[in-house]
Image (cartoon, rainbow, N blue to C red; front, side, top):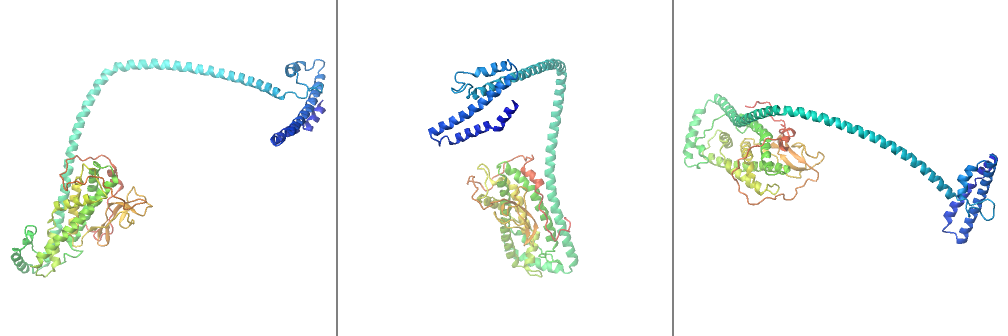
Length: 520
């Protein structure tokens, strides 16, 4: 028996049968009808031979068990498949046993076993879930009982707690009212301190000038005679001079000094330059941010607000320099008729300018700056507002520009245009810049110059693709030049411009020759 089974395995008939089936499938559409029938008959014959060998093995195996050996298995497994077509017509044992029926029976048995296993597993899971739900329900019942007990206890203490809370609320409201009164008082005091700082700077400037004049008077021995002759000739000529604007020329008296007022080492130049640079820093760190806060009430475009501040400062310097040139030309023309020396005419003009730095038309300059802002196509505000909302910043900018222009060696801002190449010697990048971009998208604060020398760096924003761009104006063209400002409370809440205080430090000082001198 074992030897017959081994020979059947070694022959590999099932492997040959499988190969023939695969080759027939591959050539089925190529073969003719007769060829396909021949191939099918060949496979049936081979299958019949295999079945004959298997039935012989079945007979030998059953005989080894006696007369009834394997009878129960044959009845349950083999007889159900026997039918009228089970055996071939030419043999005593069938050769075309339905393999598909056997496979289906085995598959059904396996499915039944799997279903039974799944049913048992599902039943166990349901029992476990039922126990878990019962435990959860019991926990919820316990929590409900505890909650009811806590509610009963809290209801007993609610009345007393409510009375205490009302007393605390009244006390907090009273403290809040006192705090608001104190804040209003501190704000008013802060405004007074700002005025005091301005007066202190002016007084220190005057003290420094008086000290310099006293030193020069002590070194001069022939002042009196020259002053008398100079004053008498000047008084006689001024009777036919200009009107009210330059009436101070009638009382002008040149004081000879050791150094020239045109010298860069002159005390007036040195002291005023230091004070103006300090004021420039204050404009950047305080006045600029106050103006940004004001503009933010009318426009949420942060970049546009920065452009407005920068262009306002540019216009202020342009208007102030133009007005100062006209002022200086008139002073030179009036002093030229009576100038007798020994100083040069330019020294006399500069000395007069140093003594009368406040002879300028500030309202006119502010109006010219507002007109310039209205003409600019790069900035805009909503139709219901005007650039006059930043008039306090413009006034301070015009004052500072006039005083810088009045120096013997004037201070000026660097020329700046959009989409220019970024100059690291004049500007530093803002915190929101693209640090690899080579072009300036817009300027935030100009660089302070003295001739070709950079005294204070400005600030610019660099972006990729920066260009001159098209007109950004979308506001109404009908604007008044200098409308009265509406009264608005100053908001001190934290904002992008307030955040810029910590991110944009005050302009950096660049190697000033007077950096070692104290501020008066």
